[in-house]
Amino acid sequence: LSGRWGERWDDGWAERRYRSLFLAMDLTRDFYFSYTYELSLTLQENMSCGDQPAGGGSAPRAAGVPPVSGAPPMRDKFVWSHHLMLPLLPHLKDGAWLTPLLHGFFRQVCLSLCGRPVSLTLIARRSRLFAGARLLKRGLCAAGHVANEVETEQVVADGSRGGLHAGHLSSFVQLRGSIPLVWGHGDEGRHIVPRPDIHLQRIDPTFTFTRRHFEELWQRYGAPLVLFDLVRQTERRPRETLVGKGLAEAIASLQVAAPPYARG
Image 1: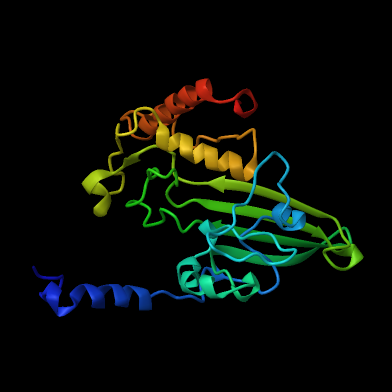
Image 2: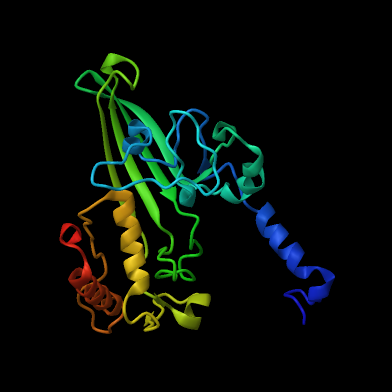
């Protein structure tokens, strides 16, 4: 077997290929971290210091991460350096030695609202689970993780009283991700096609994968869950409407089996 440039696989083509992809990554762009604030958690989870968020949700601790006294656990699905941390975990007694590396977006600006100082922070956390190129990663996996999931948090702080602990805080969190069904673009997704066909697969007729996705959301954020369907509702040639109808069917099916407190 030959590689892209005629090299044989046993000559180390795959190793050089993946190494070049790794070296092409620019860690100075879209990656961020903090020594003093747990960025993988929302403001509410950080302020509660490990207590359950309002609504019954909880932030699961990263597997094997030692606890830090008085500090909330990290959410490892947003920690892109989690794999690098694994060899260190058995040898650590204090998780403060670990610095989570997140991928997404971070920006903080100071504004003046009618002469009153206000700090505005925007944090976007991209999940490392089932992430990939836009046309190659669609839908969700068997574990219930949707493709390219991003949690966006907007934090507004009143700076008129000095530090954040003394002023008023407001946080708004929303989540976006691929439609939680098993779907994709087939072979067309591997080529540059303006509007590739959408293939809705039926390997999960009972919507087990979709149920796992919503169970995780309920555990993280609590009930009720509010969904926004952003796909087209009418089309001359059915494309997005296929997954839109599939999502409506899945929600209707899951609503029947859902407990009363989780129903919309």
